[in-house]
Image (cartoon, rainbow, N blue to C red; front, side, top):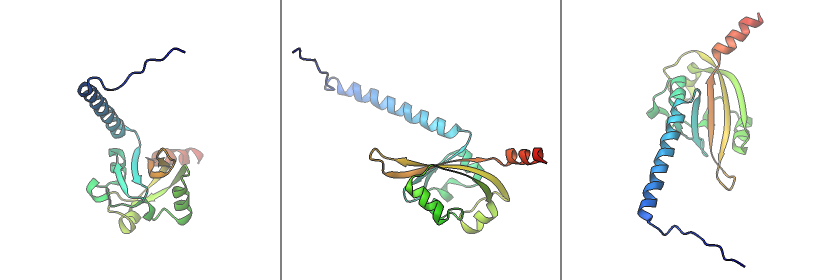
Length: 157
């Protein structure tokens, strides 16, 4: 039986490490660029429900300053998350919701926002899992669909 040659990573490790770091930097840059430019709000929460990151679209939609919400806002304490929805989120269901998002209510019950009134809000909640399948966080993909819904209502009339 013929023996196969194997390659090892013991060659010029300094050069290899530099190449790998450059690739990693490029991937991080690409990820950050895409995250910042997505046409929807993106919020990333840890497994405890703490907001860890959100993109500019989400920040503008909510009318918040990053330092006022990052590591402070808890998804599970939102006035819109009842026990049934909390159970679905924590069990890892993919969830799609549409509802009126009241900024005046948010100001009183949840977090400070410079926005006023109400928008029609669409959200998809997706679990983030590790290789073992354990939920380590949640991503919320959000859109303000107020204009679209108002146009639909006018068309129906």
